[in-house]
Image (cartoon, rainbow, N blue to C red; front, top):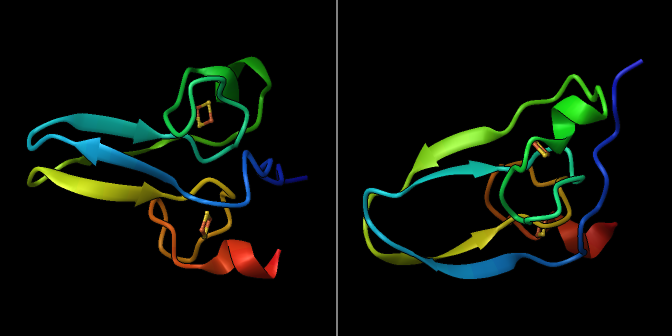
Length: 82
Ligand code: FES
Ligand code: FES
């Protein structure tokens, strides 16, 4: 049985990110340091892993908080349909 990601919140986490920063976005929804992974996916045996990205330029990033985006790790508006 595959793990259904938990909806951390039904809106994005909109954050300023710096160029060159490596971020591990939580895909399982269980992290307590949203939107980033804190290792909870292992503790709860979700079988899921974070999506790791390196920020290319100083920017405002809308990280998906609902974990159901079709363009993970970024918000694509899917949260409005949940
Ligand atoms: Fe959710 Fe790591 S805690 S992917
Ligand atoms: Fe997940 Fe917007 S917060 S699609």
